[in-house]
Amino acid sequence: MKKRLFALALVGCMAFSMTAFAEESTEGTSEGSVDLSAVETVTDGKLTVATSPDFAPYEFYAIDEDGTPSLAGFDIALAQYIADYMGLELEVVTVDFDGVLTELQTKSVDLGMAGLSPDPVREAAMDFSDIYYEGGQSLVTVKDNADTYNSTDAVNDPSVSVGAQTGSIQLDLAQKNSPDADIVSLPKVTDIISELLAGKLDAAYIETDVAKSYQKNYPDLEIVADVPYDVVGSSIGVSKGNAELLAAVNEAIAAAKVDGSLEEYISEANALASGEKYEGLLDENGEVAADETEAVTE
Image (tube, rainbow, N blue to C red; front, side, top):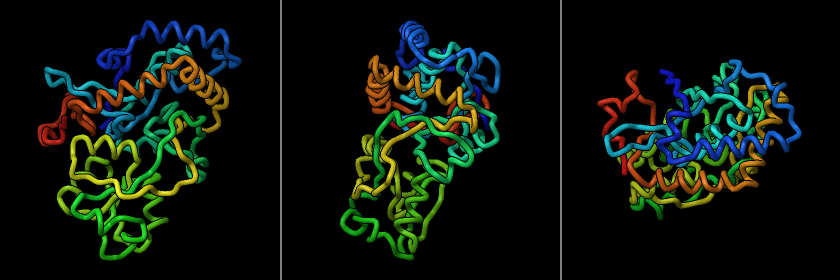
C-alpha cells in the first residue's frame, strides 16, 4: 500500500534545516541556467517522488525515542533539496522497489529515488540524472560460508541459492555473473538479509554501502567480493521525456555538491542508519506493522 508523506514534516526529524535549504535553493535558482518556471510536474506546485524505504542509508525509517518512525536517508534529504531548489512542495510516495519503477513508467510520479543505477534497459521507460553518489556492488554471505562462497564463480552452481532484490540492478548482476545458480528474487533487501541469516540463502548481491549498513546491525554478514559493474554510482530516475525537469534536477544535484549539502546528507544519513531503524513499508496507520516489529534494528 502506498503511503503519501510530506517530507517537510518528515525531514525535521532528521535534523536538517529547511531554512538553510530555502536559502541555498534561492541562490541556486538565481544563478542557474534552467528556467524553473517552465518545468512541468505531475501535480502543479509539487514534486512527487517515489522511493522504497528498505535501503539504508539511502532511504529508511529512523525510529525515535518514542518508537515513532520517520522517513530518513540521504535520498530523502536530497529530494527535499531539489524540491526547494525548484520552489516546489515535496510529496513522497513509499512503495516497494519494483513499485518505484512502475510509478515512473506510468508517469504517476516525477522522480524515482531508490539508489537507482543508470541502466540501458530502463532508459526506455525513464531518463536518468547525473550520478549523485558513487558506490559499488558486492557479493554477501555469512561468516561461516565466507571461504566457500567467496566469488561470483563460487556461487555459480545450481546447488547454491543466491538472492537479489526484485527489479534491481543486483538481480541483473546475479543473472549475469551467476546464471547457473538458484537465483531467488525477493521484494525487499530486509527479506534477503533475513534469508541469509536463517541459512535459506547461501549468498546475495547487494549494493555495497547498503550491505555495510546491514553489517553494523548483523555482524555475521560478510562482504566477500566486489562485483564488476560498468556504472559505479546512483542516479535519479526522471519521468521520461521531461527535459526541463531533468535539467532542473541535474542543476540541483550540482548545486548540492558545490555547497556541501550532499556530503552533509550522506554523513547524517549514515549516522541515523547506525541507530534504531526500520526498513520496509509502514501499515495503514503509518506505523511499523505488528508482525514486522522484529525487523526494527539498532
